[in-house]
Length: 221
Image (cartoon, rainbow, N blue to C red; front, side):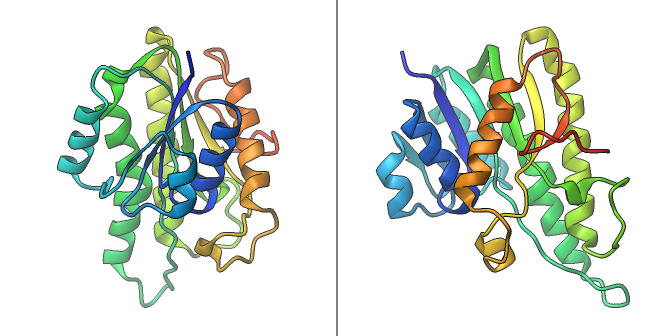
């Protein structure tokens, strides 16, 4: 029987590259997004589009649709990057990033708990910009804070789910050539997906809760 992966934000960028990777590896791919793409439609066994992961009713609808299905891997990938400058901070922008980058992954993970089983894994796509120790340039108030919050949520999930045999990782994809950074990154989405998949493969209950770069480097909190 095929293993099943659920990927949020699967219609483009890193999410799409992950969908393509797991499709090529023989997995059953379930893509979650607000609007699908031709590329996702080609590799996904099913696309749940029209899903805004910040909306409780949308996530509840997703959970209901998945009822009775076993999910081996949940990848919380949907994210938003914006910038704020000190002196003209847009708190609505920060709030929106918190909703998408931090609250939504926790909302999805909690809603999909009935689909997870012993041996399932959760991968939260975070950022090294969520590392407080690694912050030597300042700025990006909303993005940094939301990813730091995601890391905290992920660590708590790892502790709470360990007795159920479910492992959790916080994974930084690297500086990836996606629309989020105007395609100015250092690695392709496909390279990032390979690294992320390798970290997921290496994830166990013993190292659950960690924070890693896709290249394998352990990142500071």
